[in-house]
Length: 271
Length: 229
Image 1: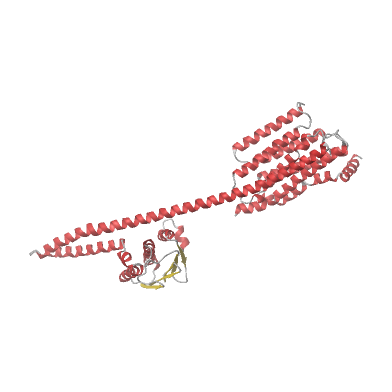
Image 2 (image 1 turned 60 degrees about the vertical axis):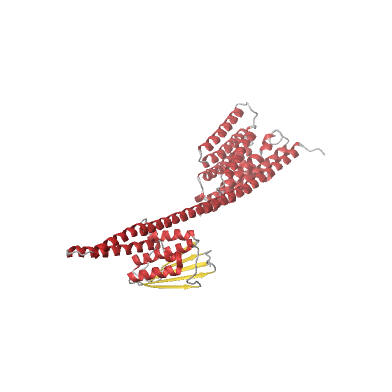
């Protein structure tokens, strides 16, 4: 069978059409594949970056805690010791018979000041490193903290805990973060909320720690706070702490006051 | 008298060779779609719209000269050359990088050289078509390669320039054999049925290009929506 030139040309053109269409299909397929790959790579990069940021944050928090500990130790061991020596010296002065009344008064006054300073150093070093938290756990530490604030302010604290015992212990990282968050929220409420009552509920279910912190104060707009470049440091601090321990925070504005709902997942109770 | 002759002859050609009518009317489809999506057009897609208008308008003298039985070979060659230049400029307008523009300018220079070579009889009359087609086709392949190098487009099928480029690629490479062997296909002295057969073929292939352009214009809105997301 002999084909004419025109048959060859038609066949050739048809083949070219086929190749062009195949090439276009290939372009679509390959571009989509490349695009998916690019998205995947970007996602992976994002995950790595987030993980890196989390680690960085965790390290900075750790450094912060180490620094607090060092400061607490220095205060207790150095300043505390010096104050004790001072107190002893002052006590010897008190025992000595001094005729001048003004000196007597001064020595007694010094004694009071030294006692007050010793108390203050103890209190500060205790605040810097929550010993109760380390030794007895979250519930005791929170109760102690609330009790201390209640003594010095007119705010009424109500603390409830469910599915969790006084002896329950969690990872030190979780305990410390939760405690610091409660400290931050309480300080904020004391400073800004004008609240008369603060409720704290701690619940532990399915390896998730739920925390509800509510006050009956004036409330606030989170958007306004975050928009202010000088404000919202406390909230950002809380968010940073939560990001390290797989936690999320929801800030709600009920009719009165503010309500913070915190959820920390993948949280295991230690025996 | 002459007008009646033009109309009658045009009707005769149109009814004898309806493919020519299809080929001449097909650009109206992307033009209509392009006008419909005008507010979403970019610089280069707007330029492509102008190309379509040019294509339609420059086709009218072809019909008139054919009806009057006037030799329109030179006009046809010049028109084909201008069509290719127009299409190349569409890429030129669309690209932002200086290097890309330099590459396109070098292609344009080669095209003009080819045109002059033919004009001065250094290369055979009609030879420029496949050469220019090859050059323009290479530009469209190069464009696809650039597209693959930079996979930022979310949905390539909604990307208008993918369709425009496909149309150009299709037109350039599918017609290359017909133009390359023009002595056996579309030259005036070729056996008439063969001559008309390949002309019909060309009309269909050109129509496919315009259909692809129409799809491109239709996707302008979708592409704009994806970009805004």
